[in-house]
Image (cartoon, rainbow, N blue to C red; front, top):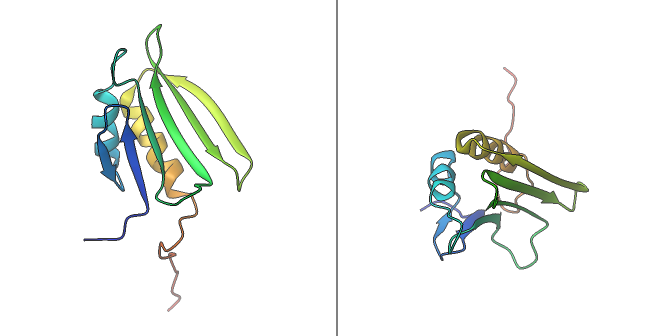
Length: 109
């Protein structure tokens, strides 16, 4: 089993460790306007410095919040495409600093 860097939790108690784009798509697809209205993704640490959330809007669509205190980022957007949301979140999370995650190194030959 690989290291766990962050997790996605939905209001109904579902949790996925280090979710892929497909896993995020599935979790967002399962959201509804009664008892499973949001998903939160954040690092598995005591006081996370970043998080992202997706919530169902009453008028339809989704609200996506991305916050990273180390980079002074706080963005709130709305979207209707679950594909776009899952892709955007995956790209955004890949750029986050995660303690213990190996850094990529470029070798020159």
